[in-house]
Amino acid sequence: MTPPRRNPNKRLQSLTLAITVVLAVALGGITYLSVSSLPYLATSPTTDPAFGALNACLLSAVPERLGFAVSRDASSVAAWSASQLVICAGTPPVATSSPHSGITHATWDGLGALWIATSHADGGARSLLRLEGGQFVERGAFSPSALVGTARGVVGLEPSGALIALSSTGEVSATRALPASRGVQLQTSGDGAYVALFGGGRFAVVDAVTLKSTPAEAPCPVEHVWWKPGTPLLVVDCVDLALEINALNSESTLAPPRRRIPSTLVGPGGAYVQSCDVLPCSVEPPR
Image (cartoon, rainbow, N blue to C red):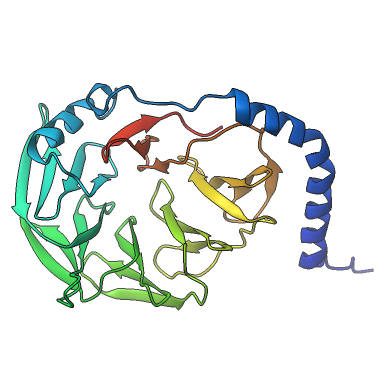
């Protein structure tokens, strides 16, 4: 006799019911930890154990910053103002600057190249540029509302809701429409092979090249996501609970109730960063 196939909807309902039962016990712990735990705070960007020297370089070269990006090996940091882009790298770090206006996002791909997105309020050109041989080369005529580096390129989300995967040459490997894209954020896995989408009532994990969804799902409104280095696992924070989810098969377990600082996994090395004074500061890995 062939055993009946398990209905995915019933599996999700069972998980939701189990979570509801556990919440009665966990909510008290969550409430206590939320008021008694103090977040990790860096005393100064220049004293950060991982990025202190790079931050000191950037503070001298670009005192008024609008944003920053960290390379996937955590060896370089870029920051930009309204009129210039500065990259600090090396030991000791050396600043390299170039005139650029209208930068909205920047990210490094897994091949070690910096990408920047530019947009101008006066209706000027929108461009996606990649740094190659010391020169920025246009790889797309659009400016995404979110941009993350992947193993061999980038994934960007246009304001219209189009999710686009590009290779290092600017070739579009896949596109996907997200009807409800407002407030959606992107996070790349440590190996750059997958991208998590969350926010605005949406959660999904997609292949960084094909943009096809994995089975990963969350039974609650997701507030933040952390990839764990070297694994397909994510820590997912919702309003009242946290889960550890396997991005490839959607197996999940309840994570311990504790305050986790919103941060980003830089790359395969396992460093996590948050913004402090528009510069990268180290954060303890989520547990």
